[in-house]
Image 1 (cartoon, helix red, strand yellow):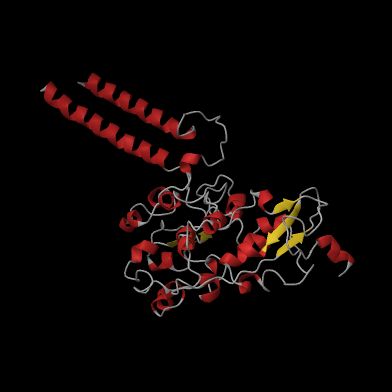
Image 2 (tube, rainbow over the protein chains, first blue to last red):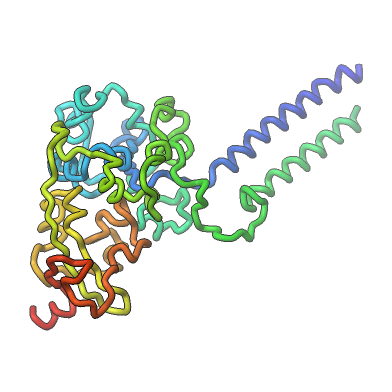
Length: 143
Length: 213
């Protein structure tokens, strides 16, 4: 009787320890954000629409294109969230859609490749000097 | 039986207290008094998207995104920002970014003109090279909205740059940040304009502006 009663409690202990280790690990793993310099989060409409915010990796694009291609030819302003981009404009070939059309680059059906940010992440240029001045810890405190 | 249950309870409470105390201290060492508390350690630079804190690791496609380190491995190192020297990477043809959306052979229109700005205070003068900037950008990106293309017409301060204006529209966001002082403040005071580091040198100093408006 006693040994039967003891076994579940041992298992409970093990399960508890495992659960706590997971919580512990996640606490340690998340120490603010360390996203790449220049990554732009665009969350003008995403949250309300129930989509993840968009993260634009500047570094990836500047390896392939000079700044001028997007910022002069395609008319992207130098301002995070300042371009009023929506999916209709993209599928009509404006902004991201000038390349992300299945021709120059992969097309709009890959929703989650762009809409990949954590929900509620505000529009920002990540790791920017401005962001660091406001949030010296460089942590999750966002503009 | 009751004794054993109580023992387990005590053990669990002790365990919970133990882990509760940890997050207060430094994650790696458990020591709250570490060096460079607010600095990003090298191990945290250029993390893969799933661990960068802004990408959602629950999103399956996040795993498909390229980790920056992989892309940067063959590029010359820089001191800040992405820790890549992008200008050098372009000079050494380590990267070949297109100048046109579709035409891979389009060549940039380079303007090789240095502008020297005599600065107040003890810092060396700023040499602004059009060459490196026109490799990446079109004239219309900066002129006339950000910089009026006229000698002495632009008031620039480090404060405005830090707040994301003037040079700070790019520097401190995507181009190398202001911590790399000497890349701009590169000409010692008193050095004649038109010397080794400067070719054509219209001098645009703020001091001069006030004298000859």
